[in-house]
Image (cartoon, rainbow, N blue to C red; front, top):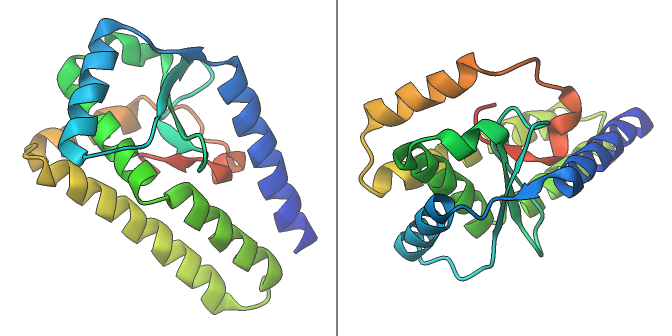
Length: 172
């Protein structure tokens, strides 16, 4: 219980540190794509899009002031790829997935001895990703294009740290 709580705490500290050191992504392309996706998803919450050389995979963090962190390479992505990522991550924001993940991690901390709690948290994580993928596909994107891009993201991944447990990552 204490070890898991420490792991989550270290993960949150690392995510916050990387978010603090990231740069606000204010290119015309990213702003335009973000506004387009926000309109299509009818998102009313303000979301910052940030990039960092320390980030290997897109993820969302925060509930009150959510932020989407992208790898630095995202600045060179075509707008179609950026749209896929932002749609997926904005779906996490709209669903308050960061908050529900935090609650699931808290449940795992307090009920560490109960295997069904761990199973429920694992299944919740899988269903959360499927729901966000469904949002992307519901916007009219081709499933093959989306799957191809996810594979491309996966190929470019470096070793994923287990301490990323507090961020809601796209291609776990």
